Image 1 (cartoon, one colour):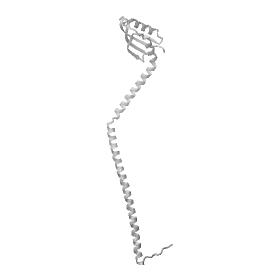
Image 2 (cartoon, helix red, strand yellow):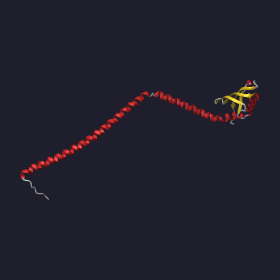
Image 3 (tube, rainbow, N blue to C red):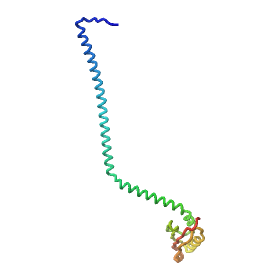
Image 4 (cartoon, rainbow, N blue to C red):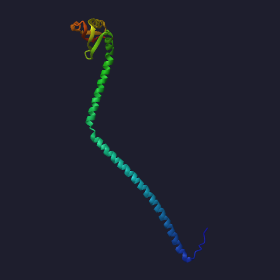
Length: 181
């Protein structure tokens, strides 16, 4: 359906011009609003990205300071020292489990009134070096006889000086492990 144009003929040209200008005005207004929205969005992104960039630069500067203060050779040396300590501890634990039955049997042989002052375990020689004090000489003799009657412990060294004092006597024995207890 076509509408009739009721405008006088001399105004048709100016009306078309008016409609074109109105269309251009709306188009310009819409483009301006879109440009402003895009500008606000891009501006906000710019400020957010600039803040993140500043944070990253600050973090990178801190990491550079930390990495320059950390000495890798010292860290490696500390790690090696720690590994050596762990190896030594594992060896001690292995020795303890291997020789604990012998130590337990030796402790069972110690009579009352005898105080052990030092117990040195030499795992390579399979020996225990023991020194201590007894309130009477008879207790040293009893310890000596118990060690001689043991199946897995044998006396290697028992000096005569163990028997010189009658009371508050000091003693020293070196005992070897011979068989499993």
